[in-house]
Length: 317
Image 1 (cartoon, rainbow, N blue to C red):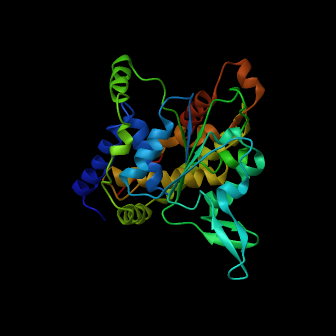
Image 2 (tube, one colour):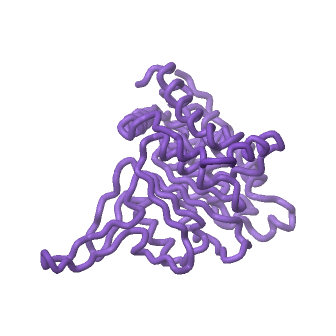
């Protein structure tokens, strides 16, 4: 297990590198890094021009990741994402041509603007770490993370991502508008060359893979597993929830709690980790009953009620 001071120093380097080009997004940066160490995928939802692409590119540069990107439109086909086979006249055989997703960090930009068929091409990659083309499976590089961006539903040309797609994202994040002083600093940065182009790696991919292995060794007590299961079950039993959290959601919450504990210098998960990340992991996974709108309640408010009704365990070490 990494020593606490080494963990803190490594994480600080990555965070500071990203924040050189992304002003005032400390918590979003922390959560993005936490999801990466937990081997999770991230959905960034915001209006255009908020820095979603810059965030993804700066993370990729900071950790020496091979970066792939597709700007999704209705014309994008599954082959653009996962690749295709074509006949090679020189060899007399069909050769596989990798798609954009065969990289370490794949940016699926404006994913909710493309067809359901193309969206579904990502499901196997996100869940199983491989793509299948013409009946042949091709493993993805490791580590592999998808960062998808979407504009709010209702914007021109957008559509709802299916529940099966939403459930594959470990967390949904929003950058939000900057403060006045932050926006002034952003305007200063936009003069001249793009700051993200000048970023240098601060850790290697091997370092990231090692950190992910360390995260996987963080201890989770049986009481924590039960606590997470009870929270997920409570969402399914809530009167205002039409579709509650799945077991996959509970697994994602446990994994990101492991990463949060490790980043805090602990080798065990505490209830506070669960409570800290509960909303980020589950808000996009539950579907509310129409009655919730009549009561002026959103997913956050419903989950807050769930969190209050389930007693947290007291761990003894």
